[in-house]
Length: 82
Image (tube, rainbow, N blue to C red):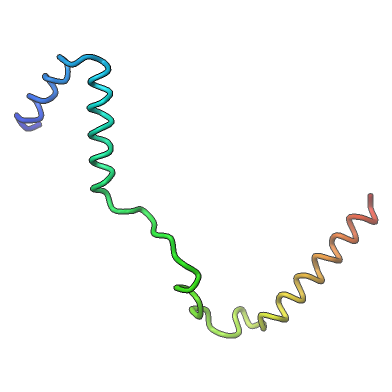
């Protein structure tokens, strides 16, 4: 530990509990601002067109039609059982 940090730690012991909490909050916020963002949010327009056509070997419209049909069939089976 540096001498400067040692001195600060001793001074913290002299503070009231409220002042210690304010100091911790201040230090945490200051450190948070210096940290890079962990994850940036992408916009859909940024990723548009990144997947080659046809994705996974199937046309997009064929995929949607197939999954809707499968979903309908699954729901019908569940309703028949009830």
